[in-house]
Image (cartoon, rainbow, N blue to C red; front, side):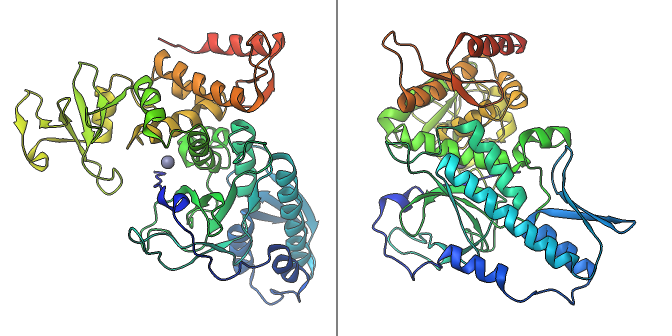
Length: 422
Ligand SMILES: [Zn+2]
């Protein structure tokens, strides 16, 4: 299951510059123009390199080699080549060129950036004031670029990090996990070594994971396994940051809209139960699934009969799934360690296309509309409204952002009618 963790402190602390980052373009062109690296590799080694470096698989038949995207559910053929002694090196070069061209395309369209091979990514804090060892990044695979592209298309304008819609997130693909030996198969949103807001993908043992949410659904996997969903969740955290939700004053009203509240002294986030009761998380929500206790409005742990426990550890504990079913507004995924995490997953589902919206709609009209309104508020903050107070841009059911005309409104209305929103 995809999980993530935040390092919110990274962005707000003084950042000591590390060693100078590798100059990306130079490093990459050296690799491309250098001597052929694999003339003696076995076919097996070549296959594993194709998958690990590019997210690509190949298929040979009758002297024709087909190169296909791993993790795609559609027609995934990228190109074909005639089998020959130099074919692999030429095809690798072609894939490198495709990657560079896609990166350039995404930089131009969305103003985002990507890590390059061997780049210094970040030294995460290991305590309040101390940073740990440098984490290094690699260049993205072609499949990862397509997954991030799908997320960007569906999340626009959430990738922007400045007020002028010129600067945007950087995506790092880490070689070393941020949590030491433990890796959560996930991504996180934080500042990089140069304080630039960034998304960090943990090293991933499955380069063949679904690319888009639609690929995941077509391959009968959870939407959350897709690269698009991982990226979409982290881009949603940037929305939250840009919309000021890292301040409790701004987050609290939104949290209330999606079924959360706090104790009076703000010491705990409380999830509202359907029967007027409350639940709170007693651990990080990642290390153990039985981290929830039922509680009163002060956060004091209770059992289902209302008996209090001074030591919450001794109170009966509940799993994510159990709390999800008892919640006033059912979280749309199993990942809801705090209201901003529940909002990030909800926004991701709302944005990744019709399949995601259908999934979100199962949590009811109140959550669906709260997420839709937050999304529109961000779009309005970036693109504004007309003098009559009408939003200039709206999001279509496929996630794309378009001018708010009659046709767009009709498409949205027709799709919304197909959802069983209650
Ligand atoms: Zn998150």
